[in-house]
Image 1 (cartoon, rainbow, N blue to C red):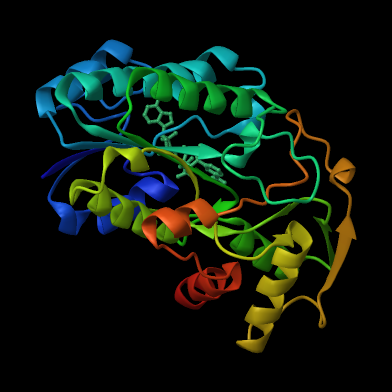
Image 2 (image 1 turned 45 degrees about the vertical axis):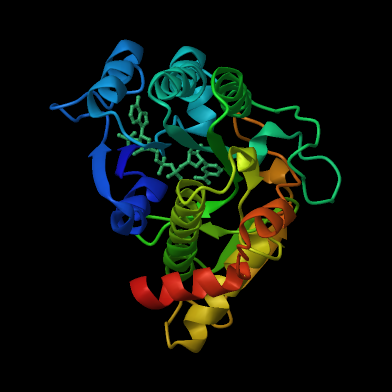
Length: 298
Ligand code: NDP
């Protein structure tokens, strides 16, 4: 079994290098790879890579994820997030390979307070969301054997993340101001990568092709960025971390307090019942992964 991974050094890509390893031979690429093209702006190049490697599964963890920058860089965002996934699906079809791809709750308009289901109407608020939605559509139009995992609020132990930023700010400042009118579930890149490996294994073991499609994958429960920050600071305090003042003051503020080029959805909740019912996979509460990440990295 051979798996071709694009975007090997992103948050999810890095964890996939670990989680996919037991499934077979892994060929991993990033945009700078020289032996094979892994640059998603080079559409002919990535198509040639697939033809050359002839994998059983293509996993695309590469994406244009700079949400605000995308507003002024529509062309590159669209090439990477929309055209390249379509090209990968077309190349996969030619060799019968599965395509695994990631998408986002930003395909929805963020209205209401109900967790989004896979079949709900899409209406992205920004360029990033529109290009990610087009990527989903291009894959589905090209080739049936695909798994598209929509997720939200991804963090990773490696590199910087929201939790580490909150801890740093709490050491530097008297009080913090954090948004409390966006709702979602912080989801670990490790959870996404492990879930991906289980899903890939299931399809390769011959569950019928009818499991193909879109799945919502996110940690269980919900919070706001404010609730997330509060949890992180309280957890670190209990573990003995010292801050500029005690207790740390975290003021809840509206999204409008931090204007950004790209509009953000208020409701990023994702309903994961389809993942559970189809693959018997049960995402744990978001606090579990965040606590583990803090224990390992702070
Ligand atoms: P990251 O930004 O951590 O990783 C994306 C990777 O894609 C980076 O390694 C980046 O490389 C690479 N990349 C960007 N442009 C290109 C290109 N032209 N060719 C090849 N590689 C490129 O993102 P995540 O790991 O967090 O995201 C994984 C998936 O999950 C994506 O599909 C994303 O849209 C989706 N998602 C992410 C969310 C989040 O909160 N992060 C939320 C919802 C969905 P470089 O570092 O060199 O730019």
